[in-house]
Image (cartoon, rainbow, N blue to C red; front, side):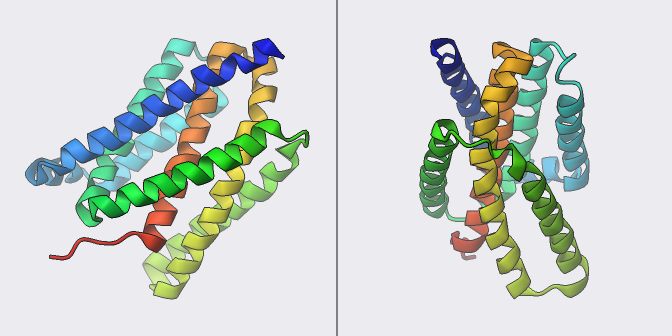
Length: 216
């Protein structure tokens, strides 16, 4: 039991590093609007493709990938996410973002603790969460390109909060399983990556619903 507990300080250290890189790089970039416009001029699609490729490769190659390569992929992902976050820093008031961050951290802590302490196997919820996530992604794309309904955006953001809240407990619960399959070093990195995604997405959904936008 003691050996299993040693994984968590490493996992949360990597989680903290990833979040720190994302928020700091996003803030620093946003402090230079001209640079932000130049960087974002490449478009969100190439950045999204880079992130999807990294997530996909880490998912399917996790057993064969060297831990050092996993770390590099995770750091690159954190930086690219920080680039997109510069647009968020330009859109929302900093005090509002800080408030939402604190709320996100509190929700994350509670659900991560539940996922860690519960004796239940939450793996059966994986399929439900995945299909729910795919449904919200499809719904969001349809609403963005076709329906353009503000109420639908609110509903999708609300569903996103529920889905990623579920993923926090689910991914935290899976750390024990990954530890047996992947070993300590890989589990610390990949577990941090999964929880990083949960935190970032929960933060964005909460910001969409409750964030206060800047006024011109």
